[in-house]
Length: 175
Image (cartoon, rainbow, N blue to C red; front, side, top):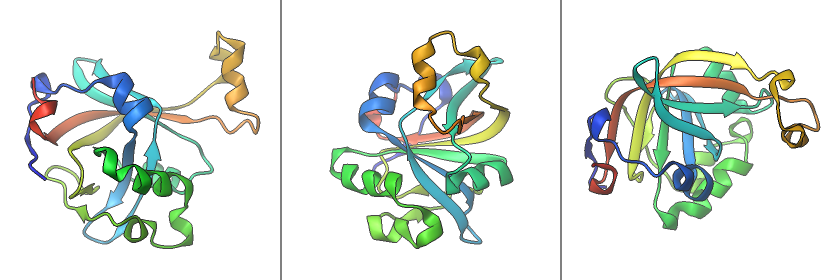
């Protein structure tokens, strides 16, 4: 993959496309020790908060990756081209508790430059993030009653903001 470092000010990511159409892999843990997990995410945001470039993710407490987002202070988000859609589908439906779903998906974890959580060799974009905020979603804050229909088990997401410390991507992600 022809990824190059991208300064945060030059990062160009189509947010609606990358979250709802392309999807991303959220990966938390420690690459060197092999103690990490990944899952496909389709809800989140990118932007500026507290004068820092950020990626915002949400993870339900029942997901295996939740344990990693709670234990580690960093995470990566990796974006892939369309041929990897099947792999992302598998990684979003199988649990890492049950086996090596990353190998089954045919992806190759790689060390990050700034944090312990890995990215993936096949990704066209990798964001390396340090957690700077977390909060359990409070349904009292839902202004649209339709939102609560996403939580029939009352398993509200935990929201995490991660400061983007490093970005590596193909030229299409650079402005």
